[in-house]
Amino acid sequence: NLLDMRVEQYSDPKISSKLGLIAEALLLSKNNEKVKNIVDQFSGVLNAADTEDNSAVTEGAIRLSESLLSYEKTDLLETLIKALLNRFNSAQHPKEFIQLCNGLQAIAVRLIDKRHFGQAGTIISHFREQIAADSTRTDKQKKIAKEELCKIAHPKVVEALISALREKLKSGNYANITDVLVMLGENALDSMLNILTHEELHEKDPFELYVLRHSVAMVLKEIGQPAKDALKKMLTTDKRAYVISNVIETLGYLGGDDLTPLLASFLHADSPQVR
Image (cartoon, rainbow, N blue to C red):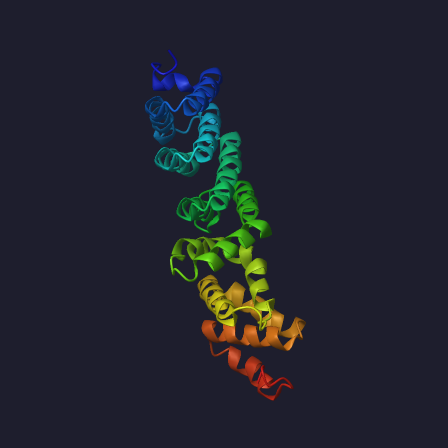
């Protein structure tokens, strides 16, 4: 009976929450056709261009997204995430906006954990749009969105991204990972800069670490001035020769005339590696 109801009736919390539970039961029973029907119904409501509070539907859709992710239903998940992101852009009610921020943040972290980097990157890019200078969101809403974006950039999450990047280096198939790191931007800087403190050891492959540093350097170049400022600070706070050498190498990739006076003094460093 719930499946045959009109879309307009899904705004009733009792119905939308039950629909999410029914979808989870259908996933367990592998009834994919009916799950698709529910996803389409939820998507229809979320894609509608209205400004009313759709918190109940949004809650059900977020819960269903998490279930779809657990059951690896990637096509259906992509459809529902697109609808949630459309709603993220249009939601005006404060409660629903917070709900979307919290839900999409949790979904993004799980997507990264399951190595669905493309979909995670799409969610992150929408968070960045919400906090952009030309965004129509209120200062309070921008603050909420920024806080949730910072949660996606939690050090453990960024370390998982870097670990995945290290694994993919030899295959060369790591563009989605570096795209996510670029979009996380300065929120992920600390974990990325930590790569530059890794010393090349004889018992490990130095070329692998060099390629990893190069890949991270390209990400830092995309991040721009915040990355450059952080690297400059590292030159003055970390005195280990191999770290200074790595930072100088990375600054070389970033480039800029402003670096010349800073780096010139290191031509006379005690360490041959730094010189």
